[in-house]
Picture 1: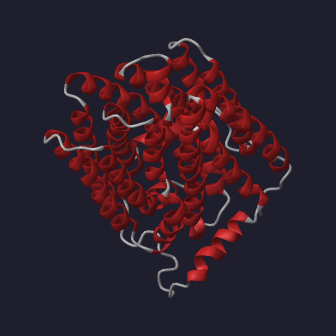
Picture 2: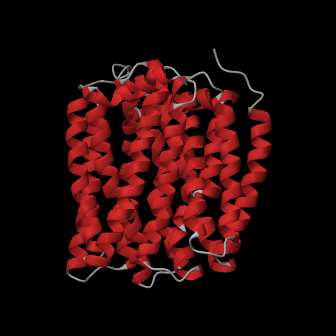
Length: 408
């Protein structure tokens, strides 16, 4: 990508709609990551096992398996402003309730898991609407740049959120992290209501809903090898490799005997890598084959996971997590760009829902399965097995996918 194109990409940040959306999303994600750091550490402090850590992650992501396709239909047929505002408002109540429970000393592991399930349900129904905002406010030729820039704020929040969480955990405790999370929803809800016009994406709203519509469009997208390869790659990466973040608190506490500060450093390092990966994509030509970027970096993600399992020093962990963050970011953003740039606008919500299903569905199943293997084999052996399986799977899938042809 030329300097001129890079400059044009960055200039999106100075536009009123995209710039405001970017900043509001950054604030919201900072709060989310502060909670993501505090929650597993809170569960461990409450005596929860590694298996319950996996169950909590499963509860957060499992609703995607059942509801994200419904969320995709909502994104294409309903008022996205209202979908986002209503479900995000419900989500905001969950960290608020945790603040109250912590202040009165009544919080229990099962309560945390139940609230994670509520967040997971609302997330599954609203995320397709959220993910389809960027293509709705930029031109088609700017989709790749818009998604890469959106990922920079997400990964910047992965740095700032854990840093803030680390400070709050050692000063006021987990209650401070959940309070920050609750407040961070407000600016995003306000901006979503302002930035999207009413009925912004309802091309089929005037037609009665047919339940076959959902599955027909899903099959239409999934039957295209060029698109299916992206979805399978994202699913495998989430199933096997994303557990590097989910079980980082177990690795830090059990393998390295670290504290909450060490955990926040590890998660922050993953965010640094994710940010670097997103910035790298801004320099890559828009015509570059996104399949190769997705497949090669997915394989590299598996290699790094294996190295994390074998690493004997704590400070080797943040260094490896930076590389893991780069691999995750480049692979997932490239897959998302490929999907959204090669499907009709009237199917974009359902395409995004398939992407979310692959990513979050893989994460939920992987969290549960890895939680079992961590309990049986220990965290190092479990992650090593995941890494080996991830590399083998990406070689098999990538070999076929890279020979598929682009849909007309």
